[in-house]
Image (cartoon, rainbow, N blue to C red):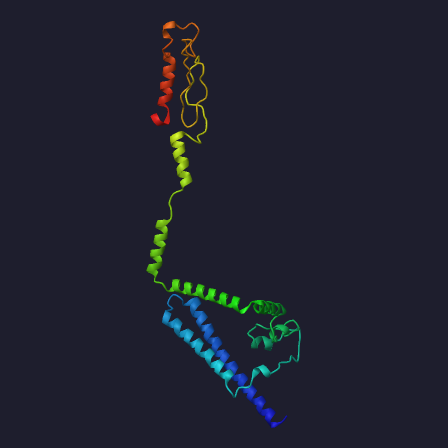
Length: 269
């Protein structure tokens, strides 16, 4: 190897070691923060959380600066070629990867050394790119304006004070009707006109020998219909031997039945 190639290899090794060290520090900071969130959340304060986020952000910025440094070789130009593939467990590899990759086999290599997305993801990206290309500039601008308007309205609602949102919720609750018009009309019709009430027999025994008595209406007993004949001088329900002087009068037994039925009506209780 030429001296320039040796220098490049040494520089690459030093850059990789520095990058591995920075990533290890970042991983330790993440582990520490996750442990605090899971086990010390009761006494964890918001300033402490912000400090941990600031630490992680600073370490990420350091890694980005290291990658963008002029002295750091471009890792994208480096090619990784697996020299040995084996289905057997590799203890050293498992130790280096913290037991995440115990085997370096033909099944594992395509996933860990992949430089392009999965074929399904690539197909979806092509479809999205084709759909974006079919949309004209005017349609795209209208969609952008609509999306910006929706985002602005959402941000405005989120930035509004809580009191304003509470006032709006109270106004909505006040304007919301607390009754059902159909149920109210059905209740008025049932109470006023007996609409929708079912039929049933009234309680108590029925007196024998009274013609024309039948089942009562449900919801309360109703009056029996009594027809009084004006021309013949006799009432329906009276025997043929009734006295002529009682032609215009109602028999006492019918009056008693009418009074009893009236007293049992819901409006007379």
